[in-house]
Structure formats: C-alpha cells, structure tokens
Length: 187
Image (cartoon, rainbow, N blue to C red):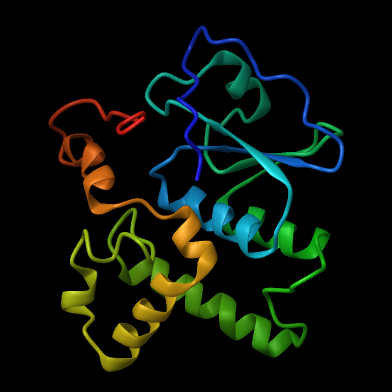
C-alpha cells in the first residue's frame, strides 16, 4: 500500500520510471486504481506508485494523460496506458506469469461480461473493499456474494491494497458534496 503523499499542482514531476519496473499514477482511495494495484500485487510486478491529488492535478500529469484519470500506467520507455480495465488487461498480457484472465476466448468474454455487469449494478466508486462502506452487500445479499467477499478479504493482494473503513471515510465529505477530500488522510 502506498504511503506517499499526493502530488498536486506545482509539485515537481517524479523522475523516469526505472528499468524493469512500471509506474502507477493513482489515488490511494480510488477503487478504479485499486483494481490496477490488485493486479500489480497479485502478479508480483515491480512497480512504484505516484499518488495524484485529483482536485488539484499537477500540470506534468495532465501532459502524460490529458484526461487526468487514474489509474494511469507509465513504462520505462514513456508509454502511457489508462482506464482501469485496460491497465489491468495490459498488465496481464505483458507480465505473463500468473495469468489472471483465462486463455479461452469464451471464458475471457464471460469474465469481462461479469465485470461490465457489476460496474453497472454497483454504486459509483464501489469495489470489493468498499462494498461494506456503501452497503452494497445489504442490497445484493446472496450466499455466493457473501462467500466471495469473505474469500476476497483473505486474499493477500486484497489485504495489501485495501484501506480500513476509517481511512475510506476520509473521502466521504467529498463524495457527499460537503467539502474537499483529504487524499492524504492517515499519512
């Protein structure tokens, strides 16, 4: 889990990405970026994380990704990849050890359909570690979902990338439109 404070407008850009590594531009509490962090951890990919203040983005970050979105990956050669599902698939294709997506095209399509369906039925900003915070489990309560959630919370990659509910609540004022988020909450 990253403990680095967020880079904001006026901050100096980080140096180049080290050979044999990849950089993730993230925000500590972003569930979309958490997907990419999960893949990085699950596959054991050497990486560094640069957290971005999403309300006051550095100009150098906008130059890398004009949409200003996280997650964004940067390779040592300066290639930039963004959008959560695309970054995850990219990592799974480039780092072939411990494949996460099935090789079979039909099984891969089924997995992608499930992710697409979940992204439409879950509340905004929901992911496995934020389900309890948004009470999704209450309105989607099924024995299978409960078992899946319990298994996910025991997974080492999930444990390494999740935040406590106290930390997630640091963003609640912003999510409710009641004030700016504290992207560095708890650091």
